[in-house]
Length: 510
Image 1 (cartoon, one colour):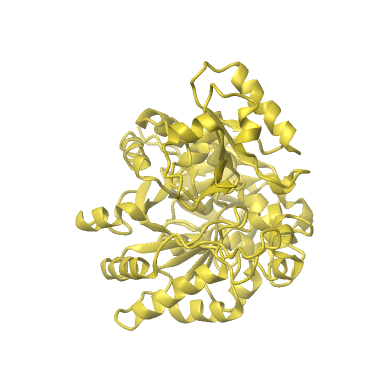
Image 2 (cartoon, one colour):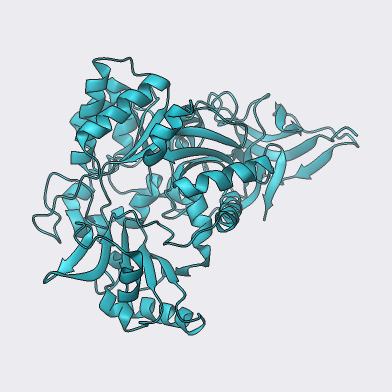
């Protein structure tokens, strides 16, 4: 039996194709592709499935260019500490979980942010030992670069207590771990746990209008992704960055960017060079205000980074390098300039992730090298407004120059937006970029939309398939109750998503 044509009619269409904007038009979808985009009223056909949108707005599906969707799904079962206002609030939530958990079982929590607490300090093992000494407790800070644990968890994690990330006072660990690879999800995981997490992550992404995602994986998440793709259970097009620890293995197997299918493909290799601002481990060229003489850390040596860059570039493997502080960005650019002396670097191939503290001279170098900046506008919404964490850590004069989306675009550097899951939600990211109070950061709604659609598609080499609304492209769409180009800018994050469509299939309906 021939599959019927799906019609969305009586809608406004922001195609982002040559900035076209269609009022009161319709879109026809046959199987998984767009077969017509029209400004004319739809004339019915009895065999078609017609959905009247009553003036709602259709956009290309959102592309989240930097995320940890498998992890986001997995941690939904953890205690969410995101709305706590002080340490006691967090302790009470953990205490409630302990009451209902068998002794000896791990207690996991996530999403806490001391910069929003009255005490403005990290949780310690003393705080957590007061809750339980019979359950190992493991609480991941919102940034994922810092974990607070109790004494039993410290014992079970079997860490090298001389690791610089094991924070001590008077020579004794205080239960704070910074940038130590002990696993964002703690210590327990099976393929089934991970697959369930991926499916939950897909559902959350679909509810937020995300149709394509770049997921930065840990090694144990690769096999579950492959299984779900084979079983055709993914509802988000997944581009995966493999962890740098598996780069040599991938290279030996002949794997490189672009290998895969419509719903799972290799994007590149993920590399870390520093930590985070929240954990005070981002490598910066000045002191943290609340931690004098601390300039952050490097998590990789230049010699190793240079080797990876040379070998990845030679085989056509995209690199996605986490570099938040300006010292880390210098390290990245120094290495790429050395690579450029020996090899051709394809423009828009290699990426810096985050680039929160980037100087004008570094922007010029990015432009000359053709480096992509993969940035997170939601960070400004969470921590960049006056009085928030950036001010607390770095001071207001630095904050005003951070995440300079306006300058990035003006320099002609390729920009794409992601969320890093802090929090998920492209509409919130767009709101953040458009309402930022600093001129170096604030951009237009149309520019923010492009950074979440067509520019993101270009970065993964999929611009011929997704990112705009055009006949022949894949039918990946998000349908909004209101038009983000017409509502007051401060209202954008409140716009409701009515439908999300992936490959012509409705995967979310409000």
